[in-house]
Length: 195
Image (cartoon, rainbow, N blue to C red; front, side, top):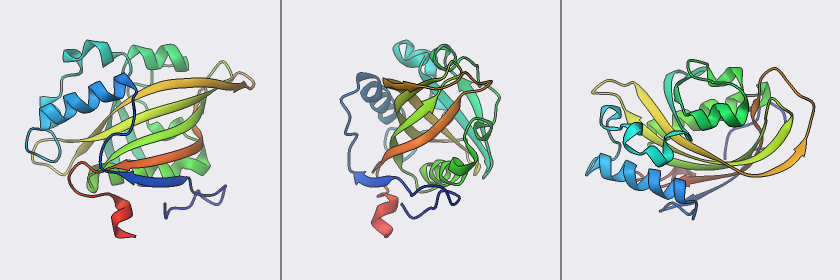
């Protein structure tokens, strides 16, 4: 990774893969659905993606509208996200839930997914409202909105394990720690190809 973390910590380890390297069944199912919907295109149209048509995944899915570098809005958040985090982030700006020292990284990676385009598998830690520190794994894939420059991202999130407890808080803290980032080549290479 070439980004900095707003002066706090070091960038996470990054690597590239030409396929989804995860045995997580939810990730495999979303990736296969996404590839089926896109057909021969590099990125599927958002209008072709119907989360309700994949009910086994729906509760774990989030869709983001990328409106600007500091405005990434939860367009949809499955009920599993609310159950896990203690809030329904639908309509919220992702940056309201990301600590200040992770916002540059978050903006850069989310926009890179959409504009490169590329998939991303991220391993990180969230701190939930109840204080639970959870090791997470998420898959992010780009979506195109019509013929405009507007982009969306569809993602799916799972808790791998609990790694500790802290004090309860008003809002969860997403991506408190970033452990590993893997770019997934979806047909346009990866950001690491240019380094």
